[in-house]
Length: 161
Image (tube, rainbow, N blue to C red):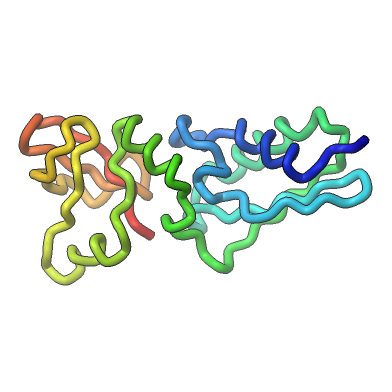
């Protein structure tokens, strides 16, 4: 009895994003497809953005997690369709919030800032919506830095892409 696709997905659940270590690459939506063949597995991944510096580490971590299967491992990076925050799982969004990073808004809520409106981003610490953006860039390029006006704590907001 060989390894099945669900076994590979389960192993991938144990591979965490190096920049957000509470989220697996599956919860992030980075893993797009698993294809099993005779003695081999192909994992298709899509970076959160084309210049994401974590992709080499993620590929190495995937190889490490699947290395014990004895399968030949191919990792294929696909840029189209581009990754979107809509691919984040609901569990992943909850984990982001619990970790102290505000999860992405819906695309329409995020685009308000483009129309001179304000993003209404909930503070992951106290749940207040009285927040303000401090910087368009946070600890990584995919996050913006916000501050809560209620508890005064700074926090990252995972940008909607």
